[in-house]
Image 1: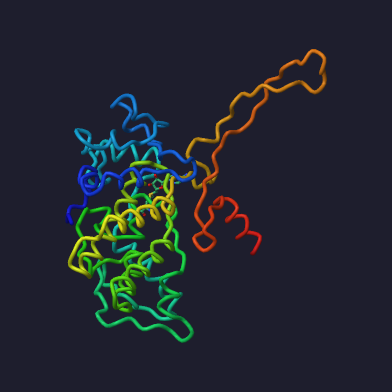
Image 2: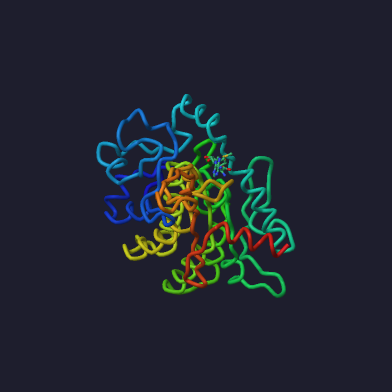
Length: 319
Ligand SMILES: C[S@@+](CC[C@H](N)C(=O)[O-])C[C@H]1O[C@@H](n2cnc3c(N)ncnc32)[C@H](O)[C@@H]1O
């Protein structure tokens, strides 16, 4: 386990060749996620906006290409603010907002911690559940971070603004909280893992830019490793890492959150069609059609993927 906020792609590759390929998968297109930013294009072929991110482009001598925002140059940070409003949230604010969610769910405040100015004091006692709600309900409740960047509301290995490392017992992410609850309520390794899988299946996020999305996915995977090592004192087996990575590659996805499509896949393309007015001459007319790729998400209960836009439509019909 590394306590470096920048998870090195070469290190992941060394752990298991398969892991990075899984973390780069785009489940909507069946291919890989794309860069979806111009900030790498000076590197040449393979680093343009629509190019797919590959293991080769981010490992070996390119192993330092992907860096968290806090370690990017000031110039690059400014470009990204202008281009995609990339301003990250410090941990103490993520904590405050996550506390509000838990206050609504538990019906009481200070469940996981007590806020103190720009920090917090962790509640050490085992967490109790309100009448009619169980710890299993808490672990399986779905949560989504919209426009997640490096996913600081979901997991909190470091403060996304200052880069400060956060020890396991100080973590405040929505997934961190579920893993704490699992630690407090399970006994055997197999039971712990079974519930950890359920927790990962309940945590969603989407992001436009491919590099941040990959970092978010890595942050979730390494959160799993952190908690596993802390609980069992040894490194999780490859099968676990692959299963968790597969879940993450479905649940933390690349999407334009305004259109529910893969970024910039909604362009007009020309298509030729037989003319219906003059069948004899079979004239061809040019018409516009859209090749947008709507984003798919996994419904883990039904074990079936669905379009994200359909879920939004269903939710608005319910209102
Ligand atoms: C203000 S940052 C917030 C990131 C993270 N949630 C946080 O609080 O630190 C906004 C993020 O939204 C992403 N973004 C911008 N426009 C988007 C869009 N149309 N769809 C999805 N993500 C978008 C940016 O790439 C950036 O990472």
